[in-house]
Image (tube, rainbow, N blue to C red; front, side, top):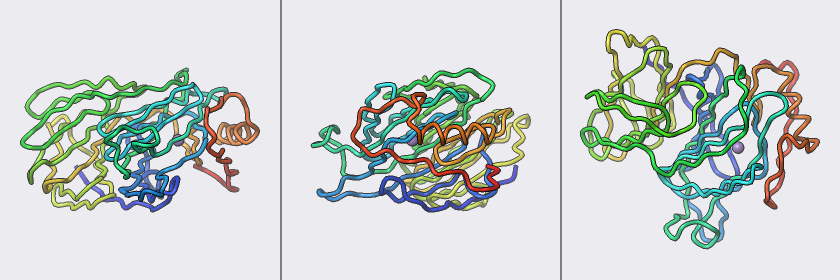
Length: 312
Ligand code: MN
């Protein structure tokens, strides 16, 4: 097995500093996971609105939100309104093909603006995108998962956010989360200094996003907001991933089977061909009904045109 450490590109989404690990120069999807953002951590004063992401569309992907701190209200063009809080997953599926799409808004909420009484004036959110297999006919949908399989291994807490997983001691876990290709995502949190062993599946690609603290794996150090990527793991010979970290460290372990189609990304769009992205830009900017309407007074974000020579 070989391991590579990748650094993020820093950006801003809805007023919050984010570390973007995918897409990035020379970085391919990990299975169908094609976009990895960590928004925050950020704290907000009493006069601050927090993260405010106006109406925008998606195609051929799922947004996969995993909260570490704070609360966010999601509203979409299917009529869903859902507050997501710590240890919960939201999955919004845009649907596949040139006739489908979805749009949504995301905004921080606090006890006085629709959040729970415990909502902190802060945000730390992992937002991942999952590229959809474009050879499947997939309808738009939205799912909220407040309860997920949770267990501990030697003072390391694991939460299975999607997929199935067999622990090193043979216990099997299954998350309820909707999937269109085989993938796994596990939140791993060290309650004490220690080591954990993660098992692997054949045919999967794997990476680790470090959300808090830093980890070490086979002599490779990976600081916060960097990505460890694993190559050529020998699952037939029971090869696994060992991680060492200090108390308080939190990572997201992701993996999955690569898709058969190519994955092009532009702005909030994913497609297997450039024409479908160009059509989505045109349709969104012309208010086409495929993207529906969100019951919100937040501003509509215009789609930027494709640069000349775009290859994805
Ligand atoms: Mn979005």
